[in-house]
Amino acid sequence: METKLLKPNEESINLACELLKKGEVVAVPTETVYGLAGDATNGNAIKKIFEAKGRPADNPLIVHIASIEMLDGIVSKFNADAKKLAENFWPGPLTIIMPKGNKVCKETTAGLDSVGVRMPANEIAREIILRSGVPFSAPSANISGKPSPTTAQDVFADMNGKINLIIDGGESDAGVESTVISVLEDTPIILRPGIVTKEDIEKVLNKEIKVAKEVTEGVKADSIVRSPGMKYKHYAPNAKVTIVKGSLENFVKFVELNKKENTLVMCFDGEEKLMPVSAISYGNINDPKSQAHNLFAVLRELDKENAKQVFVRCPETTGVSLAVYNRLIRSAGFNIIEV
Picture 1: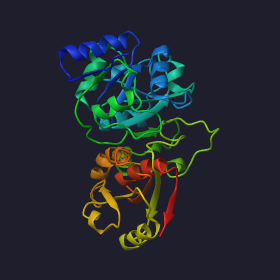
Picture 2 (picture 1 turned 30 degrees about the vertical axis):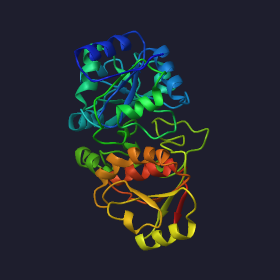
Picture 3 (picture 1 turned 90 degrees about the vertical axis):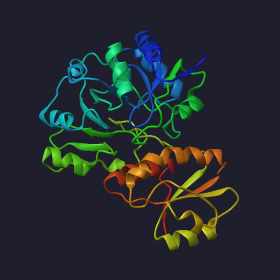
Picture 4 (picture 1 turned 180 degrees about the vertical axis):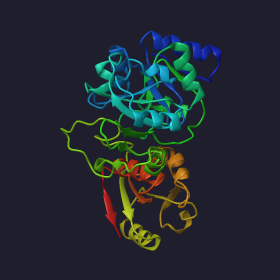
């Protein structure tokens, strides 16, 4: 299969729409990461997504829409909390888990009675949905378990020969996947953190919400999950990754004692020169949005540098930093030490 990598224009967007309507898979830009889009109502299209990614079929997908009217049949209930969240955060990087409607195929939801839905802020993605009339499921457009793609070139590296088309919309803004919140219970619960924070949501809903323990802990192999990004090792480079909690001084000492050939460090801006091995910054220590934006690109860079062992300076675990921490601990397979 030839994979076309095209800039967004009338011709390429028309092609993307036609492919989606035919049940094919297309990689599209969103403001979070690039997504591997297929018709959320077509089980065969969704199977092609799982095949291209090598993704376990019990890992549910998120449905992307371009208008509130498209919720009809995708969800069976749009409650007061969901309406408030949609009014305040859509279009944007927030996925809301609601009761599933009859239009969504079982492959999209991994057989669950719930479905995650979001309205992307990226204009190219929304235009493709509107013009095709296809609400699409779109997990990150990478090989399952590897770092998510934030450029079309990242997608091409993973998906060349596996899908028909990649639309190159430039670098993703956020750099990490959407926040996922379930409103199935009276108290909403965040299942995956992102740029939209717990504090942002509580301000809109005017009540306290929960964060699932799985955000910072592992999930049992036989557990049923309602959100992607919870169950399996994700975002991982080839190297063994270790998250190191502690002061900068203790971190440097730890690296010095444990370095070996092909050891690299992920640290914060300005710390690179202090490290006893090659180091790559993944953002400003005081700017978690910069960390989120850079994270997956840096994780992919580790493979290009042929890293075998990577020590990572640990971010904070509140606000947007929680999203960064969540992705890092999964990339490390929960390999965390304190120094």
